[in-house]
Length: 198
Ligand SMILES: Nc1nc2c(c(=O)[nH]1)N[C@H]1C(S)=C(S)[C@@H](COP(=O)(O)O)O[C@H]1N2
Ligand SMILES: [Mo]
Image 1: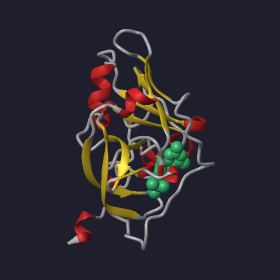
Image 2: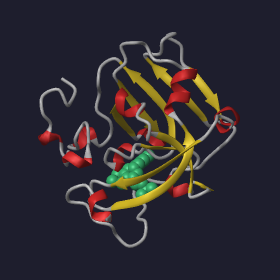
Image 3: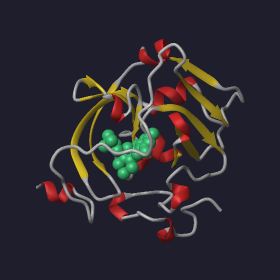
């Protein structure tokens, strides 16, 4: 039954809402890049151009999607690049426990390394066998289905390996640092010791 797949407090709406803060960015393939910076193992930044990123191997993830405003979208079929592929190309320093995912216009979300390399986390480029639409994050969006959807950053341009945790855009504005929908970790006032940056 679908209800058993719904985290507490969530409902399934009609249709598929699109939500984000700010404007939909233009995709410029010549200047687009995907950077891996911060605490890399080598100390150097790694940069994928669009042709390089586009030709990385892709995997499929079928997953539900839970927004903190309480709607859930069930059974999305995403295809894209696994974080494992990024980590292999640009390994983190062994001390890295957190990752900041950066989008166009400075939007960001921080997640734990364990959530980053979880098997359902993806840099999605396709939804339902079609390129992701502009308003859903074209050309590349993060999908972290086991956390509230603000962590599923659209229009990704970089990841930053963090030796110390730091809050992203919504995490700085009162939302929970970890954001597990099954534990209803919606707001920062709910954080237990150890769940947020010191
Ligand atoms: N770059 C960026 N990514 C973002 C957001 C945003 O404001 N900017 N909003 C997040 C939120 S709160 C949600 S619920 C989902 C919505 O994804 P959708 O538009 O595909 O439904 O995108 C997330 N990713
Ligand atoms: Mo959201």
